[in-house]
Image (cartoon, rainbow, N blue to C red):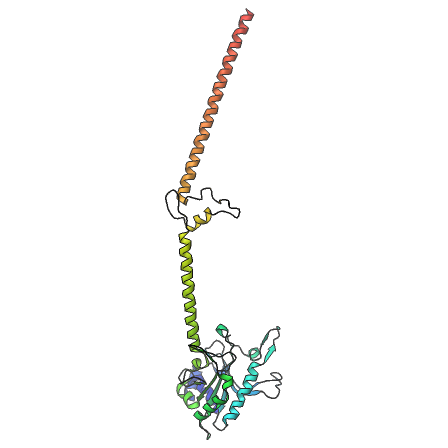
Length: 331
């Protein structure tokens, strides 16, 4: 019954009748939908999914909600009868299961749990383990709060991360989170009901199983990298602008296209007929050259015509004189 109540509280954080009303409206708030919840799931350390070997652990609940803020969650429910040492031993088994690797059907080496469930890879190289949530239902004689602390002390090797200046990293560590069923009913998964082992205070579930401080540090680092990259791009642009050629005729700076056109090829030869002129001045120069060439061509033609006329006149004069001499001989 505590497992069932935990599922209802994770779905909505509301009484069962509210959950039923939401189900009827096909709009269940909270963590996933009813189809996302699986109970008494075997997590084999040895053997296979269908025939697990000894030494594994059985999760009370597995929540598989791909695409959500918390896409995969393992849940253990305790009615405050179990000793902290017994609960802590479960995390030894979780750690062995999460560390177990297999070769998939496509030959890819991957954690065994990823063969069955999907979850995004962590950013910035932080190898993730799925989170485990401990839900204490204060029915038995043991104090839920005291048991939480005792379990945290006994499982430190599984959850404790590496502290940095402004965040903590949890490479190959299990995000272990604890709450009580009363807090879960009151706040639901989106409220401040969850204690992440090693952190102060209570957080919403997605913050508790995540790493908001590291996300913020990563965002700051990304922003700083982007600022440096933008500064570098600005410096490169300024340096390139300083090298931009100017037209030797009018002084106008070359456009990017004109600059490219004016560059030399691999053999050091100009690619353009007027590499020192801008586009407009080049067009004027080309037109002026065309006019000069046309005028020269016309002048050459007229000169040749004149030379031909002179030569023709000379030949005609020679012929005339020759004709006069022949006429005198005939007389």
